[in-house]
Amino acid sequence: MCTLNQEKDAIEIQRLPVNSEEQVFHDWTIKYTKSHILHSICSSSEKCKDPASQCLLCVYTNTLELPHLPEMVFPNNKLILKHNSGAWIEFNALDALKKVCNGKQNLKVACSEEWKETRAPENLMEKIKPFDWTFSSDYRGTVSDIAVVTPTEERINIEKLKEKEKILFYQELMLYEDELHDNGISSCTIKIVSYIFHSSHCYARKFTK
Image (tube, rainbow, N blue to C red; front, side, top):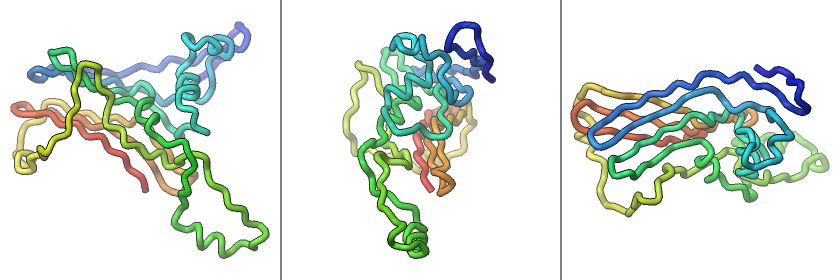
């Protein structure tokens, strides 16, 4: 909800509540925040001229430099896993979208060739969007400076996952979603599952259809 403010070029945007929860699991503290989608208008064009005072929309627009953002972005949806040593890994929409390629991508929908056959050649003009409009991202989380990420041959123990355990903590967070101009859907979600005895699992899922 937006209302006009007497201050020039300022728009008051209703602050919706942010849902959050925190759980301690062995040496890890798991915390998430969850709230509404990114507003589609700038709250104050004057204040946003100062990089330190930018609204969330301007932060995303200026940081990512994409032709446009996904239809739904959830800037307050974050998952943080923090170890007692001080190391942490975080999942958030801004860093996930930083992984989207903003170079030219020759991507076409499945029905593009059939559509072209129904059009006169003189009315066709090849256009390549200047970025990956499916918002594909290989985002694997944002890690702290003291965390060390190393390659490993270790694999997930599938048999262990089959064991039935009581779930201590579960949450699914949507980072962003877009319907690709009614040609499908693209989404990025994070899931966290903690079992009461043995382990926690975090899943980063990028889905495009």
